Structures are given as structure tokens and as C-alpha cells.
Length: 135
Image (tube, rainbow, N blue to C red; front, side, top):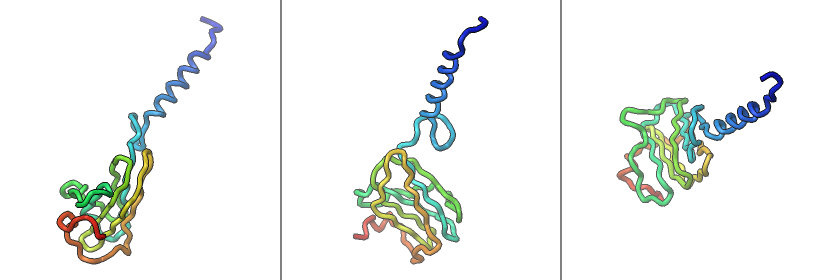
């Protein structure tokens, strides 16, 4: 039809775009945004071999959050989707380690942590066998 208004089509296109934008996540795909993210960057000069994180109220560390054979190389980073809440986190290279206590992350936010090149350099036994709390 000649002279037909294009407003309904334009409105439909705008609504479709808003719907897709509401469903996107940080990875560029579609779907709901993650509840929260935990991101760990390795600023040390050796690879991170173990990462532990648990709810602040847990009395022991869970299993290593890295897959068998997985490491976080120097200048690398790794992200995990987590539920909003309070977390204790520990990362270790075998020579250096960092521990972050009582870190809050809210829905839609990213908890950003970095293992510094100046991290503690004590030999670290597996924290799973040590129990979690230093207190």
C-alpha cells in the first residue's frame, strides 16, 4: 500500500531491540545476565595453581575451583558466576598466595580481585586440610 504509515513497524523494531538488550549478558550472547561474577587476575610472575572461594560462613574451604590441569597464567584472569553474597577467597601459586576475607558481591556486580606480584611468599599447604579461618 502506497502512503501507509511506517510507525507501527518502527515501534515494533524498537520494542524488539529493547527485549534483546534486556536479555544480553557480559559475554555478548543472549540470555539473562549472571547473578554476580567473581573475577581473579594474576599479577604475580608465576601461574596460579589453586583457587578456593566459599560463603563467608563456611568453616572449611571447598575443592579447588580450577579444573584439573588448569592454571591462571601471569597477566591472565578467570571469571566465575556466583550467587550474590559474602565470599572468602584464596589463590595460590605454590610459592605466593593471597587471601581475601568477607568480600561482598551484589546481583549484577563483579567482585574483582588480583593476586599481586608482592603477595605473601610463604610456602602454603593445601588450605582444604588446614581449615578455613585464621581467626
